[in-house]
Image 1 (cartoon, helix red, strand yellow):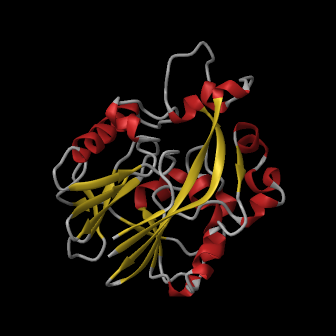
Image 2 (cartoon, rainbow, N blue to C red):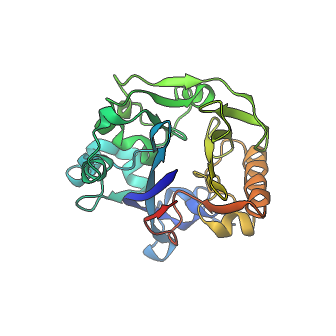
Length: 267
């Protein structure tokens, strides 16, 4: 088993989007009317898991269109809240090419949730054998604001219902291969159907915590993200990540946007 940690771009956001805090600004997470001292660059991570039963891509980072016309790709509202960058060679398509992998070789593309920085690059891997997100996330992505539906228009996305599993704040999710090697763990709050990914390595577990928190200090200090659809669920999910991170058999927990995590390979 091998986990390749990639940065498929970066995003410039308001700090309060990553770390909820007190502010007189009613919607500080938008970054509207906020100075550069309140903003930060964070990575947009994607992961390639080389599993004995197949190749798995987790989230898709930014599309290469972000290099040309961000306002058109994101839409005016999203563009007013954040900006992205995609250095040469860092899109998921380019990273896969570097590894000699075609999108058709991917057994799964797992979308932890459907926010733009996680699905922007989906069109570049639309030929994967199976693209998967949770049934709940798919349902709410068509009901709530905050999603850019054009990013998955015309793409065949499969969904999974939540089942009982031995891990997570609600003990719900999916055992991907029915062998206990990879669990998609229901960790709602930031979005209604978001999941984290728990991977069994030779000597313990690695947890890809998606946007449950934005960095290690999020769960260490119990700081919620600035955007949540359910604050109670978000707190419960973050507390579970904190508790799991303290287990002796937990090798590493990684938030998708943690600026302290660099690209690496975990074996």
